[in-house]
Amino acid sequence: MTGCFCVDVLLSHINGKKQFTDFTSEELNMIPLDYLIKNANTFELLEIWSKLPPDYKSDFSLQIRLPCFFHYNRADWRTHIDGPVSSQQECYFCNKVLK
Image (cartoon, rainbow, N blue to C red; front, side, top):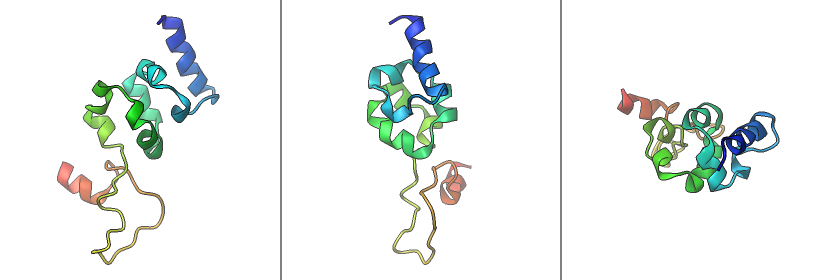
């Protein structure tokens, strides 16, 4: 693939023509990991996870941006969290473990 194609892929996202979920696995492989970390939201990451290259999946800074379903509205807890599932990075309980 040419460098021009990589720039076209990025520009299509920056200009709002394509969401991350619209990209093929080949196109996602051309997107720099830092750009993906800064711009993909929690649920986009969950949807594209199977299309990401293995080296991206093994990156810890990307893994902690996945949703934390473990601590979200557990039946054995008396608390209920309204709204969407937060990322592991934003989860209070995950943060206690990470620090």
